[in-house]
Length: 553
Image 1 (cartoon, rainbow, N blue to C red):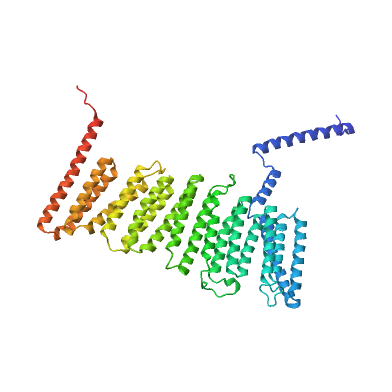
Image 2: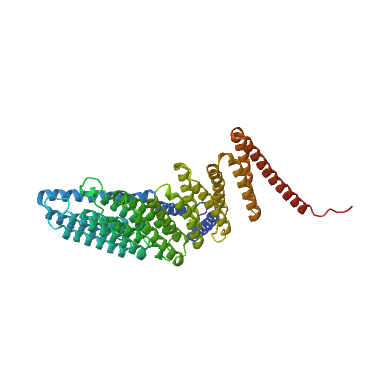
């Protein structure tokens, strides 16, 4: 056989085709195994890595695309501002203005050119263009030794117009970031004006604009940021507007600025009525209500301490009435329980301050204590456990303030005891309506009842009768436990007897006269035996019920 026989061209092509088919079959098998996890498809891995690189906010590509766009735009903007300042010093404000407007136009053209391929960089260039226009117009009158336009109202009109255009373009392009910058510029314009009523009116208008944009575009970021900024701008006005070079210090007269504060708070309080059709969770509404309430309260505190420290009662009484009425409206119009509960709590907190202003301390303690029952009634009406929780905290705080700052007053101490006992009973009675999952709040009131009862009787009765009065309290607890079938009252009775025994042996034994000592020991002994008899009989009855009839052998 000739092994060196040469193959014909036809045979060689057959061999190549056969080899090609076998390679194809091997490749198909490898692809199947790769899908099953036996091998790694390097192409898929590269694509997956690429996707992670794009979506990861800390990835290299994201940092370079967004971070450097920010830094580069800021540096470019500052460079243009420095150039405009140089031109102003050399050639005057008119040349500087034209330079700024020309630079802005060039920036807009560049932004339009980059819009398709470098979207974020184009956005930053657009914002830089708006900022250059604003700065160019601002320098026509403000922060310049020789104003180009002497009438500041004309320049303010130009500034407001430029910001209005920026808002319009933000809505048109659905750019929340552009709207945030525009909102910041309108606040700065208000402060640059340095005219109280114009400044505060423009702040109120800006607040209304934000609410409109929230309703139209659902820009929650702008809404939340605006709450901080508008109250901060009002605070800057309140300390004399140091942004315009004035020395920091409270303004000399109130100039009715509290009206504008109520405008901000009232506008933001309309948030429950703005429907967004499930674009985000109700937590955004709750956050806006809470942040607005806290910021409003802080600003109101500053204003009251500055201008109304002696006549603030009617302010807080008005807040209480308005918030209470608004909470009733929300209770019937809005499904969310938090909204109405928040304004109801805010109403009663304002009422507490008004009561304090009218009666001072300690006279206001008695009114504040009984007010908690009114709040509890409101909670039952609204079916709101939130009001119950806040009322419990408020009542506990008032009680602690009374105990730590005031000499014991019998009527006040007894009132706090009765209020706690009534509140505990109401919470037991209305547990299902209030949707309370546990008895924690009820037990808090029972604990308060236990201690305040001992406290009230200790100071209300003569020293020789303290042990007897505590024994009577234990009997009352036992009677209530039988009537209400409540084990907590039985424990309160037992603990009261334990405290009474300790007090009797440690304090009364050496101080009481023999007659009072005999009465106290006999009464307390009979009380303890009576309780023991009751428990023994109760446990025996239960034992008989569980054991059942005995079988006859």
